Length: 382
Image 1: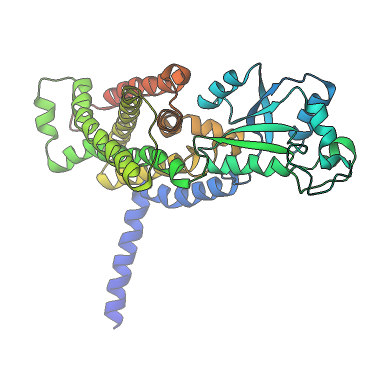
Image 2: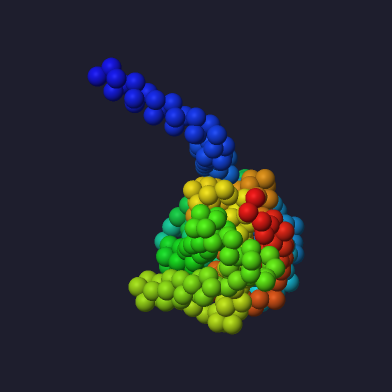
């Protein structure tokens, strides 16, 4: 028994020494729980505040301005833009420049006077034509969390506005949900799932591309081939582009069949956006592959990228609810930009010109990442 314990201790000591020498694995042991703690404790917030919204004020009175200030005082929304027409406001919602718009009609003064919340003394059984909502919210319903947060303002009391007792029997605002009036979670999840799956598979495939060749002994053959480092990187990337499109059509096709996910976008726009995202994810994997020493390290670094991509891209938690620092980090991730693109194309039928910045960012990321991977790859056995 004593000899057996010594043998176990020897193996235990050997594993500790190996872990000490493998700085990448040791770093991941520390960094993964630390990053998850920071993400869930600091960046992830289901209580959404300061949602960027717009306003269409057809009244242009002191009362309408006070109403806007009262709504903003709730800290649920933040009025960032003002529009002159409902058509202009709907285009802004479709292109995700704002998540909702408050429409204030010309007769807001009369509506406010007639509303029971001002203490007029009307019975609760009064006709709905008399107790009309004083204004209307037009909301992007594709994100159920944001839609629910703005719907909570529907019964907002007016006692703070006019110093009168509140009456929550009658709605203060009418709420109209675009793109997902039933607030089905699958409508928001399925398009976003494309970004998550492609991020996972594309980075995982290519992160081990170079180290796999080294471990299999094929690096000598690649070195002797008459091709440049950039040509080698392109050859590694192109086959996985087709795999990415297969996954795209599987997810959207089965999502439409099983969950009745609507598709109102342009196929050419979807193909272009997906191509740029696949290329951006693949070159990110190639960069990781030039850093990793073996396939285990490549998988570890893939997890290191995958966690922030899922949690900060807006797939599970609203981007608007994150702190500014977390939003800056999210902007560096390809998944964040593709999440906006695919939801805009599939659910809102947005033209690509209205989301050109996300396309340009993915293109620039692809070009820079490919150049970095080519420069880091040396055609030597060192």
